[in-house]
Length: 166
Image 1: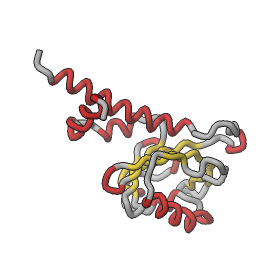
Image 2 (image 1 turned 60 degrees about the vertical axis):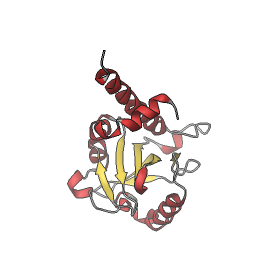
Image 3 (image 1 turned 30 degrees about the horizontal axis):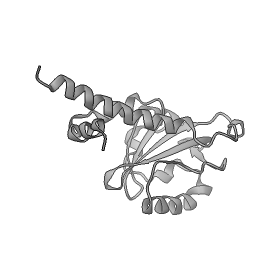
């Protein structure tokens, strides 16, 4: 384990994850092991048209078009068996979100596992899914998850430096 990661783990309790979630450029949703939404940032509220109060406790499939919901439940269960940082359906254009008003939009979604069966989904609306370059296997949302991790590490290092005597 690298030194910055050790520092991160040592000071993990002091990090302000809510602030990190809110300052992320993408819609971020924290999903529990059973598929229930546990937290959404303000970007997710804007993208999907729901308030956080309306979404907390609801199944994540609420945000999936009805025709994909059964398949999404199956894929979510498969992901739980082997959670890893990955893009959702990277080789298809069938990833879509569903707004509160029923409108659908093409989406790029990246998943990142957390302890205790939690998952962070980073979601970005694609203006037109057909315009995504075919050579591009990862969306920008994956880089956002990496940046979020780097921010956590930098916060831990900064805390360590400020808390160290001398």
